[in-house]
Image (cartoon, rainbow, N blue to C red; front, side):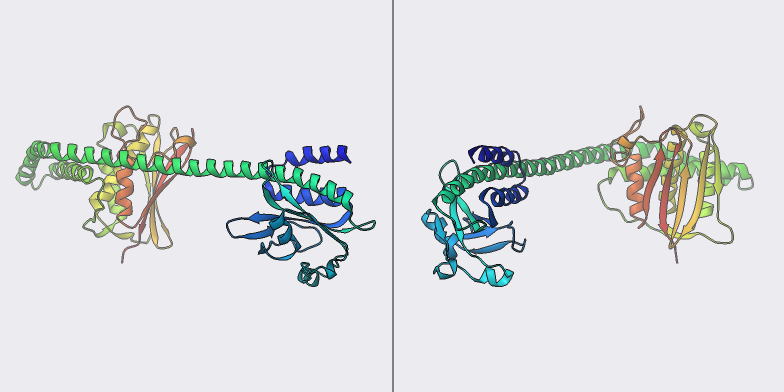
Length: 405
């Protein structure tokens, strides 16, 4: 018997999950004590109750009752074991469970469960000894089994409490890190805003010279090339001023003045403009537009063009010379979808979640604000921007904009 107890003790001590441990205790108890049913009632000091999660021969759902109820309540209050070979004649016996389960209790042995500090943590109950009735020898071994089980339960509880504390610490650390990142981001945004405010006045003064092209434009009203080039210069100046304002107000939610715009015209104008970009002069830009449908949207055309220029330039920087950039426009439900596809280096998985973060860039130059500003512009148009990418195969950015009236 003692060798069997030692073997059971080793097996119980190796189980760290409390629910699995309680099930093991019940199964070993029935086998070791040679009875029909066994139950472990644990003490809930906070609620002043006994409860059982696991039992054999009864419903598996949790059972709870006050400390002053039944034989189990008597044993946990007095700390004394109790043997009853005629339980239906015992004043403390609760017949309700037998009535609910259809089980008939012939005899019962109940012992307290004490931990290493001799504190009672629950009650160990055995029902219906198979051979005959429970005796003092059974009580001795039941107490030994209960003590072994109590130690194993306490260890499992400590391990679970330790895991819970680790999880709480990890959650607290994650919240602290997120708060810290938010503070750092806000400080960076504030710094960028102050810097932009400080230099935008000087830059705008320098750009004032560019407005002289308006006079040139008026001087040659019949010259189409002069009209085209001067207008491109004026539009570029306006975008620079707008971009300065965008950086200055980076952390603010903005509402843009919007007009109904034909996306085909906007995209074609953007492609024409990009042809003057030295970084894109070797690239072939292909645009595929829908037939027979006018893609009208309510947008701020300057801002959407700013997004498109950014995406096209990024595609060019990510691609080898003389590559192609494919731009397409498609209708999807109630949205127009613009895609900008390159066949460049692609975006590694470890960077995919970072590219929208402000100040993140893989380039040797640049602020890392481009994509974050693009995202804010599209979101302020009630749209979405996202991408698909495979390393060494290329990247496609998608812009979804609601269909106009």
